[in-house]
Length: 210
Image 1 (cartoon, helix red, strand yellow):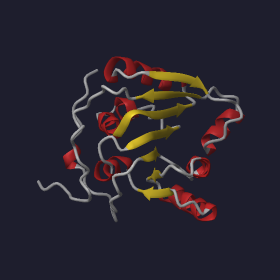
Image 2 (image 1 turned 180 degrees about the vertical axis):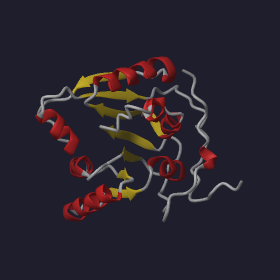
Image 3 (image 1 turned 135 degrees about the vertical axis):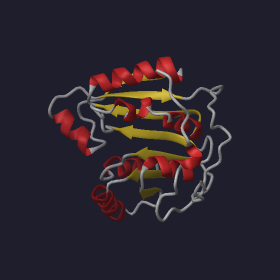
Image 4 (image 1 turned 45 degrees about the vertical axis):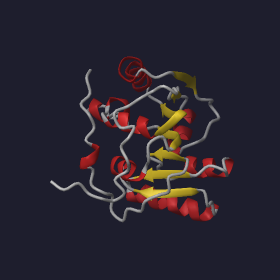
């Protein structure tokens, strides 16, 4: 499977976009109602987490959790991940990405994260030795992601079975209570890894003309 190149320069800025500083950050894609984001913010006070959620209802629930938790290292973002990441993040800025229980897109394989040209852009934003955590309750999703890591992305990873008492997200709690097998891939970016976007600076709210 050959992936076309992601057209980063064509990404329109998210509505009400605000740039961030070029300092080390962590990013959660599809943060839902913010359960994991708040836990992470509490457990890692020295890390900044930008938690992206595009669904208004879930984002508002996360905002509420954020206000209740009073965390100053958590930044909920109401946006689609592709434009926000393209406009906001600098090369090799991100310490960790979290993609926890993404939509498995059963009828649209091209929309699964490791099948998307955009995944190369994500890798360009990740620090050397940085990690991406991809969790799913669907064995076929994990198997396909493993295959893509080996064949397309050529990245080292570790596959882990998620403990039955883990409770990072509302989905995780639900799946584990049902007795489903939940697994994650911890994907690592080696120090010599290169992408075609390593010098691509964030668009910072500027929209491509034409």
